[in-house]
Image (tube, rainbow, N blue to C red):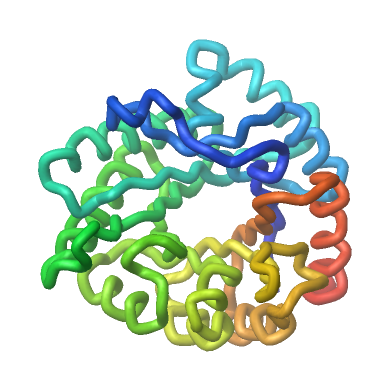
Length: 275
């Protein structure tokens, strides 16, 4: 299996969003409240060749991208992807959300990224409306155009707390959009899916992957070598379907972020074998 290994920088601090986004949709980015340059150094030291950053962390470097570019170069790490999210189903704000995603996509591309990943599809207070999947699908097709304009490949990441969680939700949304599927193994499993089977089912739409461990009780995300999610069938599914390209391991929180990265890398070296 010809793959390159990346690690998301979201573990190096508390996860959150830009508070200004409460009153200004164009500012509602994801972010890790931590030192991204230290994260990149640790990711490189753990043996990864790439990283993924939240849109807010990328945009923090507006006007000084040279600083981030230097940290990446010195660590031998490439910026592989940027991650954004949006409601996507509300027509009145969709233009504002897409403008923010376009800004983040342009910044990621300037720093050498190949991929743009988005999550979302809001849950309404009174429950899902019949056309919400169609609305989300149409918005995701617009994300494809935004990404392509920046020279990036667009992916949709089903996520807990959105309208796309369970396997039937995943099947339904991909009837309404041409966007690629970025499977996140922990989110798929926690929503009742079999990530290995979902990778096989949608293999022709998968060009970028998030690997993440998961523990049921108490609920937690884990390094790949522990928790309740057996990663072996997932890696085998990627091998069997001929996946090639970037695989990004992700871990939202861990007491020692670098150690968490190293634990997953040790697992991957054994599971993937000679590359």
